[in-house]
Image (cartoon, rainbow, N blue to C red):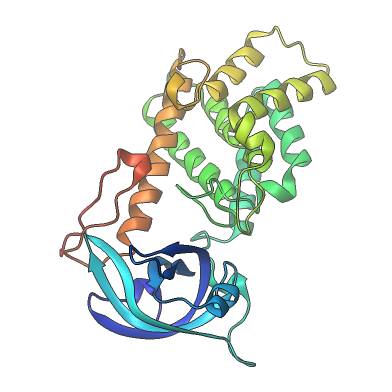
Length: 312
């Protein structure tokens, strides 16, 4: 049974990928394993009580298992309980890629769309910079997630997030013609590109040393600086300054990682579009893991709020 098909108090069985496994102790001092399982529809957590040493060795992150249990709700949080686990047998599903969440559209479609939209960047300087950096990080950009855990945290999530933001910007630019669409497109296409330097990749994603100590906003600014030097572009030109500004300010607030707040219209709009798409993905993902009439887990990146799934 797929995770998103599980109903409250329903018995289930199926094959799942262990996303994380952490050995903990009960108040009585007994070991148990806190587990998070996932398939291509979502993830759910549960505990294996009275864990033996051999359980700790065999049920580790990245392993596929066959699980039986009951899907319950505890303190408003969906979880699996009364679980039994075993290793997969020959002939049973054993490819971890089959159990990972994917973008709702193919990466080839995302690539085709973004390549088309590159031609919509009418400013030659901006287009040269975007093309140079997309050539440099082509493979990584179209395979990496956009985040470790929060939004678009799946293979090709970075490119999908970028393409969705470009679509939103295109529509908003039609409504507000005073916005410079070329700057919106160029800024969006570059704003998260350094996630390919901040994160380790699509499998068992973690932060790199550069990701932890520098962060993707500073890293992309550095990449742009190197690109304009290689392209012999004058970095004092206003068109270069405003491109760097919309990227440096896209988190909106200093406390959220931007070294400067948005000070031109396009910067403010990119920040708002980024939030819209990230929040929609987080809410959609959380609501997809609960049944009608239930509350989601609290979403830390959305002020630790939980959301209700109506029955309509």
